Structures are given as C-alpha cells and as structure tokens.
Length: 210
Image 1 (tube, rainbow, N blue to C red):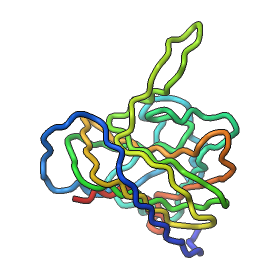
Image 2: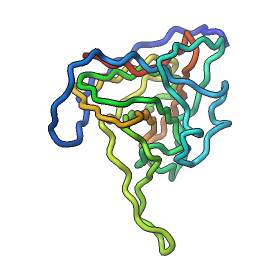
Image 3: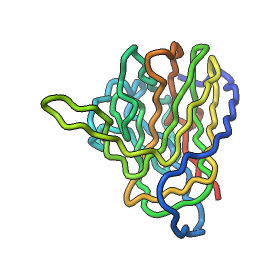
Image 4: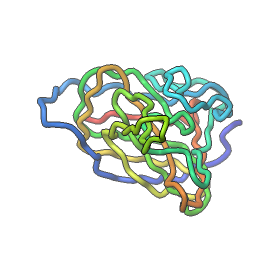
C-alpha cells in the first residue's frame, strides 16, 4: 500500500510516570531510536495471549525498508482484553533489547487511523514479563502486573494521523529489555484505533532524548 494520505500531526506532551527509588543516573549518550517491526501486513494473524518473547513483535535500531507497512488494530471489545499487564499478547506489544540506565525524555511516534472519540493508553515497561493482574480463581493464585516506567492516556485524532507522545524526565533502568504496549480504556470507550509501522512511510518508533 503506497502512502496516499497526509498525516495530521498530533503532539501530546505528558509528564512521565516514574517509579522506583532514587539512584545515581549515568549521563551517557542517548540510545539510538527503536523502530517498531511486524511479521506481516496484518499483525492480528500472529497474536496470542502469552508472555513468550517470540510472540511479541520486536523493536530495534534498524530502520524499516519494507515496501508495505504492517498494521494492527488496538484490540477493543466490550469486556477485554486485560490491559493491566506488562505485555498482553492480545494487544499491540513490541519488545526490544535494552540493558542499562537512561534518564531523559522518551518520545513515542505512532502512525494511526482512528474513528472519532478514540483514546489510547501508551505504556513503557522495563524487562517485561507478560504478567497480568488478576484477582485469582479457586484454581489459580492472584497476580499483580509490574508497573510501567511511563504511561499516559491520550486522545487520538480521527482519520489518518501521526501521534506523538512525549514522556518527560523518565528514569529507566532495565537488565535486558524494554516493551511498548498500546491499549484502549475498557468498557466505555467507543473509539477504534489502528496503528501502522515497519515501512519508511510509516516508521513508528521510540526516541530517547537527553
């Protein structure tokens, strides 16, 4: 699909939600941007509710070269899926290798097509595990998902758009990985959002800013 639409730029400035104790932070050079990648034009064909890294989509510093973008609907049905997770495979989730510390701003750029009244939750998780919060059942124990290092709820412009989310003053520390998860508020949100990525014209990405 050749790009024939002009994106409407929507910039959303938010303060990052920071978790964790105070610590000393390095002033090393900012990491290179991470570009979101997919497995094919319709990413829904590959989703699965699992914590396995092989199921999650990937992000890395390689700029996309595919002629056609990948895309994925941000799952939104009346009572699910569980959005209180650090990597629910039924949602758009990308994991990239990240080891070390970073202090600064993080900008997430997403190419979207949305209906009116659409909202989107954008969250970053260090060292994702795929754990979802649950009250438990007679056969299973209760669980609690790790908290994101940065998260916000934004309004997405209707139609084709480029949406930018800026998390300010993020203190990120990870042993091996970083995940980006997209979700919509459950139950009462009528809006629908589809995200495009993994081609030069739809190069959705995460940028680290010192």
